[in-house]
Image (cartoon, rainbow, N blue to C red; front, side):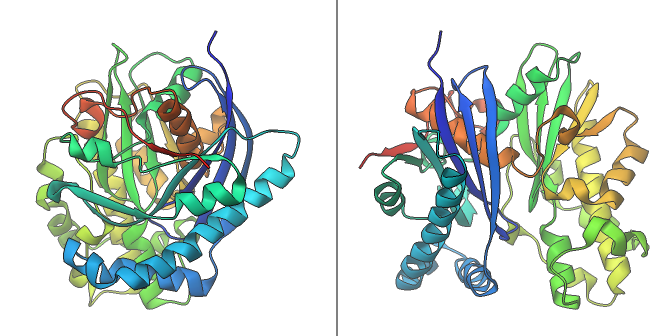
Length: 366
């Protein structure tokens, strides 16, 4: 029987809203028990600093240019993650945490140029928590020909196994970027980024209102998609590329939407997310028997309802199966930390394009 570990996973995604923290108990294989989840929102000033840093970092050269600024923001980000750790550990003081899975904050993702940079100080986090920290999950995959993303498919597979339904199945996470994990009848995994998730919608809302996002997709529902613009957006060459494939939020811009109403822009961008997800599902010869959704975008009723109109298969929020859809990513990095510690593969050719099934994660021991 494999040993179970208590692992604390941390995730700050492309939405840049805060840190998700999850404690799981798992053997890094077929067993998982969710112990607790917690969210710690970024302050407005920290969020703004992170966004400005991401906007400035457009290439490897820019990373060197802003090295001092990045080091400062890296410390702030790490302290915020540390505070999330302290809160969730205090809530669960009867548990001894064995490992911390620390993804850090992605500031640039260019695997085709050989790098994906996540900032965060694992040494500081390890010293302050007196715990082994697993970090640097993407590098080994990229060095071996992979895209370094998505990293969550093996955890998605564990969830899909738990729902005990006839294959094929799919789990789609709608974060800043949307990604799909597809489990075929032979239990083979396929995964890739389908297109934008919330990143363009959120950006549009922030530019044109004082809000951070479109709650429940209400603005989109009160508008009408501009089909001419939508068709142009759907012609982007990314959608014709063979998978596995990944995206950086910097890949997109909103220039084409300059002259349309707020509500119509929200509807157009939300429909882009919905249609690119549907097109990804339709890429498979066999449509999944069940499709599960996680991530913040699953709460956007406009997106989910439009997917339901196009895909004639049962669609569920992952919460229906007793998994909290807000914390799948942080739980995944807790799970990947265990796998990394046990020297088990975390990426495969079918999920990232890596040449061979690959180990990942670097362990910092105090």
